[in-house]
Amino acid sequence: MPGASSWSFREEDSQRITVILSAFLRESNARTAMIVDRAGQMVSTVGEEPTFDPTAFASLTAADFSANDQLARMIGEPEFGSLFHQGEKESMYLADIARRVILVVLFDNRTTLGMVKLRVRQTVTDLRHVFEEMFTREPSGKPPVESGFMGEAEDEIDRLFGA
Amino acid sequence: MSMINYASREINCKLVYYGPGLGGKTTNLEFVFAKVAPNSRGKLISLATETERTLFFDFLPVDLGTIRGFKTRFHLYTVPGQVYYNASRKLILKGVDGVVFVADSQIERMEANIEAMQNLYDNMAQHGYNLTTIPFVIQYNKRDLPNAATIRELQAALNPGWAVEDPAKQRAVPDPYHEGDFLVEQIDGQWIERAPYFEAVAMSGDGVFDTLKAVSKQVLKSLGST
Image (cartoon, rainbow over all chains, first blue to last red; front, side, top):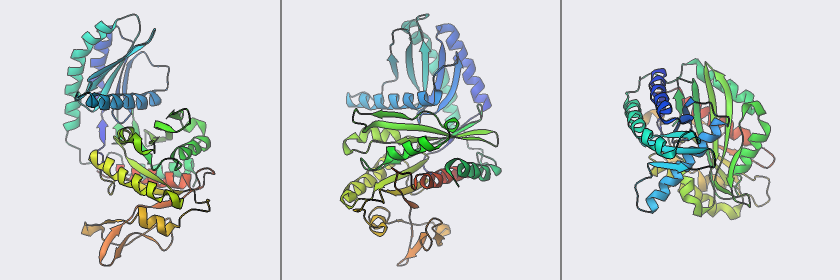
């Protein structure tokens, strides 16, 4: 694809990530772990199902992380590898993975920031291996969607946006 | 950077509305939000100042439904138009799949349009993207105003075209949206290509969906190629 390259996330990728995130949640006692890509798309959610709109959440997370990246540069840091937002009951911890995706951890007072930070370190390393492998994978050479997709998608666009 | 998630069987594409301040980018999204069936779209999120100027971005997800087993969704973003918000404007372009440039047709806004277009090229280049190869359409908004410049003037200033170097693409391509016009044509021996354009009055919705349809079809077409 011209311009920005597209990437694909396979069933086996999802399984590997779920294993890593499930272990992390068990050890840290956090509620939910999510992977969001830097363009603002939700990739994966493990743990308690969030009650908020995940699409909006993902776009705001990516924007939050990008804005903080720029702030880091202004004060002479190449990046902030992680961010922490503290609430009264609910808090979130965000960590960069391979400069392409963001790990988001939601946790409450059943655990502590210290515990989350302690357990997240190994998780970030494990996830980095998985994503680096994913992003350097040779493209299959096949179009990402089957041939009938385009025609049906055009019909849907006409239906939704008016023919 | 569209992402195809084979695990959750989802395809998400990112469309960005770009252009000068007060040109109508947010109005485009508001009209889409108002007209698309509520079960086909998410919430419209606006990170705006108290005076409703876009501070960071507006965001609206629109669902196309499930196509060949894939839940297909467009993420529509606007950027802040004012010159001094360039840092946040650039961030929103990250991972973009298609761009709509919303120009303000008023003759007094010509300079602001040109500046915003140049800024778009620069910011895309800084991300390593090429505006001449990704889905890109231009919308001339506010066509109803008495001080609107002519389409010919706007095209000359904002959409003069870029050189087509690839011999395989050096053939005339008629503009499907404007009879008698061409998207690719030879002028003085030089092959040039222009972005498709649409006339609009975003306040009343004229041209809003024509623009969105054109760019979204281009984006899906690019998914069908390797």
